[in-house]
Image (cartoon, rainbow, N blue to C red):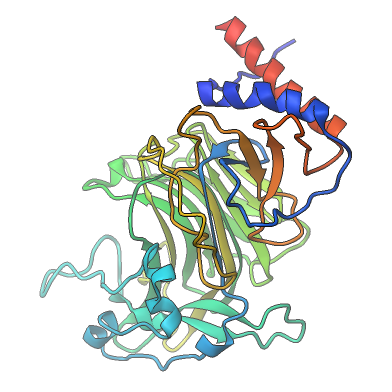
Length: 411
């Protein structure tokens, strides 16, 4: 029998798995319950899926109940003024937003008289005025508001929207958003990790993209660069995938990217779309969201005055950083508001005395986005599995442990 190769397992994982098996055996049957004080008790988070992984930090941004910040701003038709526009509401000026994210204001010009960057055919101008909170007027709306990233073709240029994390020290993440894409052909909307590089061949990037020029039931998933040195598409790096269950990208769905050291795995509404192990990004990166077009062959060329939008109800991520050896813990007194941003400070959640992750939590299989449940707590003999049947948890934990031991013996 041919057994698939097992990934190397770190001492941290071993230190979690052994007590988790004991903890699972001590548990009772119970259903998942939100933690009473948010995720302040969690030392780390375990993702589910193809590549279950441990992460130290959790963030959740909720755009569903921001009525006081809602309003569609007028388009800025002057390219210079567009880049320096002020944030569209107080929400985007608040510390809870600005401590993590930066609105983008720049264009793709190489300089006066030097043309446009790359294969662009149209001047593209990112403007903070294109990121705003909008009232949800859907007939079946389940939220009051959502965030919109707008791109529109104007007579002289393409106005676009982008925001990214302030730092580029995110090193592996499970990133999710409840989102949809609307509007005309010729635009790209995206959620992706990105490490800047001076040469295209050195770019490290994992993309979740919607191309509005393409079929409405298909999305593009890529570990960049997707082109080889001859300019040909590398099929090992990218997939053009059909959405599950007859879905189209203009419908609300949870888009998820799990970036680990072994692979990039993409999901929609919990169903796996692709798993790419070729040229997986390895270096610390930033997290990005955008809606854009530059008239090039990738995005296509929008008709003048056509518009496309990336609309997002919430963003959630569990993640590690390149500075994750820090043993500082966040301030538990700074509780997080459901519509204001992350819970507390973005610090390493690890017991500084034992150097192990004792309280393991999950954001998967929960009834409400942004809420964590406890999987196990190995710091107490009264540990109780806060999830499915404890016997199933026991079997799951033992399976992980045995698989790890098999790998260790094999090597």
